[in-house]
Length: 50
Image (cartoon, rainbow, N blue to C red; front, side, top):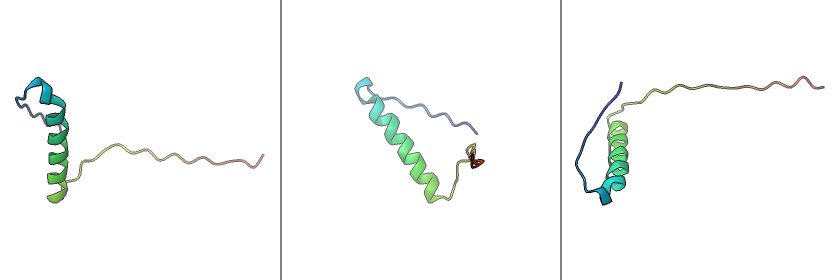
């Protein structure tokens, strides 16, 4: 799923708004029990004892 959010902010506040919104959305998702799936790769290294 892709979500797009567009808001207006003064250019000097852009990064504060950008990161604050990401944090607020993540916290709300956590409160509602919404998990965001992501690709995961487990790598195991086995030595041959040589």
